[in-house]
Image 1 (cartoon, rainbow, N blue to C red):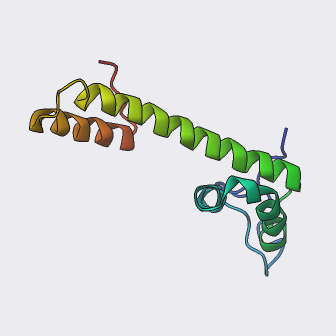
Image 2 (cartoon, rainbow, N blue to C red):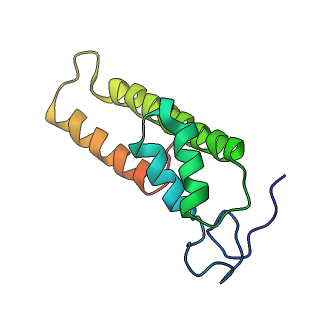
Image 3 (cartoon, rainbow, N blue to C red):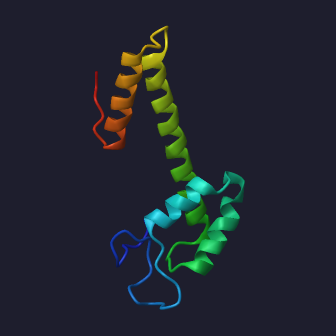
Length: 115
């Protein structure tokens, strides 16, 4: 288990421990997971350790990037399947698209419905 972060929303590194390197935030890691090809995650993890304060080693950072990418892909597949349910099967009507938009807005706001 990873050590507890000293600053909320970060992945380690003490507050003010290194004035030249900012602490690694979850948002930073997620942005890299979204914008970087999976096959370069090991190199990205090495760069993260040079650019940010973090207590995690390269293998742990690579695993975190992979986990974020996997979760994102699973969410995308789930949203796609739900979209097919709403507008598939010949339901390509304005009301079906409006229902899909409402459903996607619920997902975006973390209000998942169980119809």
